[in-house]
Image 1 (tube, helix red, strand yellow):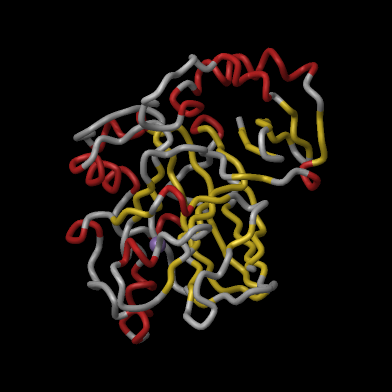
Image 2: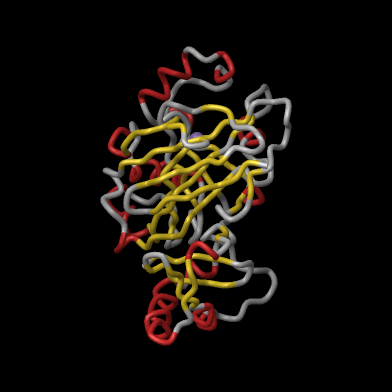
Length: 282
Ligand code: MN
């Protein structure tokens, strides 16, 4: 199932060029009181949401997908974690770009993962707001894994049971001397979308062709099979340090072709089987 959030308060299922409005499915969520449980309530209750959605679908109102303003499919992750260098060709280009000599040229096996503020999250229907117009902000197209089940010290062969699904991620980054987590966390610098594809409907996550264009010009093109540290291993490493909660997001790293964007640009990212999203830079 391909689940989306749209038009501020609506919840939908994407079906071809249409979105079925299944906002009523959220009625199955348990009432909560402060302090709210960590993690995303929708993802934590995904099986009952999907079940209710299926019963609502036949009578659900359908809208053209093109008319829907898509938000991040995950509303309230307790954290967004990201893999550092995880594609060989991106390590090679980082060696020759002085603007990127800002972190060690090693993988998550040595560096672990970084954190990106939850407040940086937007969907493709919103715009990336260039935080510092005179400084360089780069795009990084990444496969984003959404955690479905709470866990810590998750063994690699059990990771699959902890994944809710996947979506496209843009790990936007300001280049410069500040801490990496700080430069990756301005508002709007984490784009997730266009929707959450639940794991049963995902293609083989370890073999997805993907690409990123800026204003129609191809910048990044690779396949997730070229990851150095696997999805399973990344999640095992992440869960060794932090408990992972439903809705937590793991960005799995980017390939070569990382480059700057400026206001007015349109970033188009496609991951085969997960969709295609267009995001404006403002
Ligand atoms: Mn990245």
